[in-house]
Image (cartoon, rainbow, N blue to C red; front, side):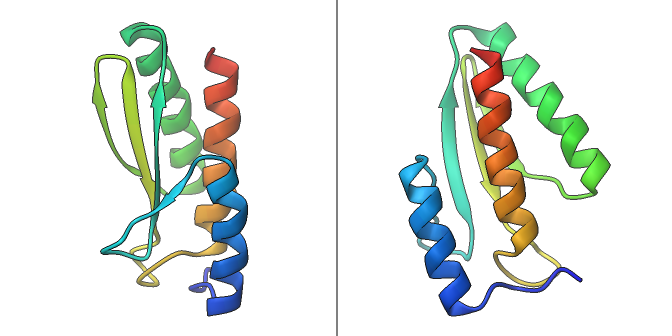
Length: 101
C-alpha cells in the first residue's frame, strides 16, 4: 500500500534527497528538482524516458520544460503528500538524468 510518510520517515528522506539536490516545496508536501541538460533534445529525451518509468509505475510527476531545463516535482495526490513511491521515483529520476549527460 502507498501510505503518506510519517514525520520521521519524511525528515530522513528529505535529508537524503537534499544532498542529491532535491528541495522541499514550501507550500506542499512534495519535493522538486530542476535538471539542466546541454540542449533541448537531451532534455526531451530525459522526459521521454521518465515518462515511460512513470507510466509503468502508474505514478506521474508534475513537471515543466523550458529549452534545456526540466523541473520535476514528486508528491502522491492519493495520500495527500510524500510517499515511499515518491522517494523511489526521485532516485530513479536522478539516475535517468545521469544517463542523459
